Length: 395
Ligand code: APR
Ligand code: PHB
Image 1 (cartoon, rainbow, N blue to C red):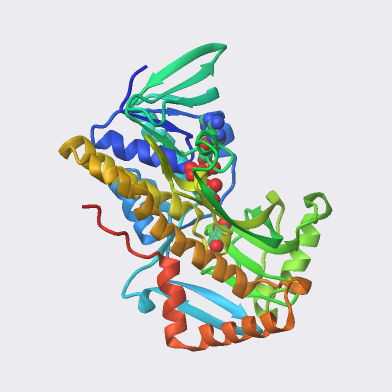
Image 2 (cartoon, rainbow, N blue to C red; image 1 turned 30 degrees about the horizontal axis):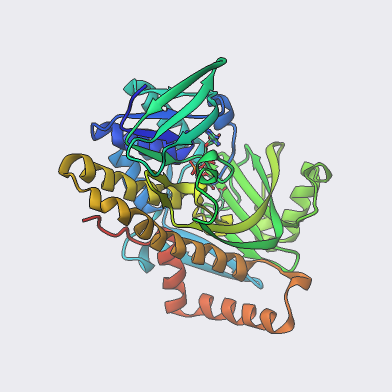
């Protein structure tokens, strides 16, 4: 096979990049290790920044999102019994976020790929990248016991943090930055109406809580839990009881409980590798960075990387601007680090660090909460990051 851009991974990063490039007349082949059902079975976050929404519209995959997604003009922050609504729209000069599950974004992108007729190979095993620092890179993989090869101009590594792309870069090239947190999130998805029309992020001495949603009839809740906690030890009843204990009485009284459709525990961590390019390989999304979910930035940072690489590749193919390729990593990383900072900050602000925090840090955390929730500048700071910082121009 021969193509212009070989894309490794059919998560949101790979599919969105493939769709945008296809519409720009640039050929791609997508190689995915799993089956479509497996990819769609992963439950992930559900808040899209304005810039991500705009990019999905540009990619021509926004029809169902615009019909079924919920535009949210605010979120609520609860700290120490105090309830502070963050009026995102007023604080950011009109910006909002869209509540629409990552699973649905992925489903829409998969359908668009299928409709376009552009090649996508599922259940591709033993994917290997070759000639990354040459002018003729290629990818080999196995399908149904046959070994196949894709020759290309560039490779987009969109295969998540455990993928092969990052691991194909020679040792010593990448610098890795990491922060692990001493807790995880226990998530529960249920077909019950959300407890509140807007998301609630709550700090409580028993631990952080997030009340999120996927639609008017489907809720997603999260509880901060110690890292050693096991999901088997959390019956639905125990989950709902603990959630109520961490919410103000009036909110808890409105909570509608029901059987869990899904329940899982995810550890929280921050991770970034630099640079996001090696020769003809570019890293995007989770292949280059992980954020804790507190800022709702995972999918949005993936879309941010796609935005930059897409605009660069269009100029490369249309205008011969190969000089821009070296700009991808610095451009992408400038925005990634701001998203990492915000995700780290929200995690730091709202969680209970228990014995992992000394008295000084506890006082600083309290002062931060007090300041950010009472100062107009503090509220603008959180709001402008939550709706998403602007993209830089590619020129
Ligand atoms: N070969 C081919 N495909 C692979 C390989 C491999 N060796 N390794 C992983 N993959 C596939 C995975 O099966 C997965 O479908 O790459 C895809 C990566 O998708 P994601 O992990 O969803 O990463 P990304 O597309 O960057 O999306 C980022 O997803 O993980 C969340 O929080 C994250 O919301 C963010 C978003
Ligand atoms: C979710 O709905 O899964 C969700 C929403 C906001 C977050 C994290 C997760 O910050």
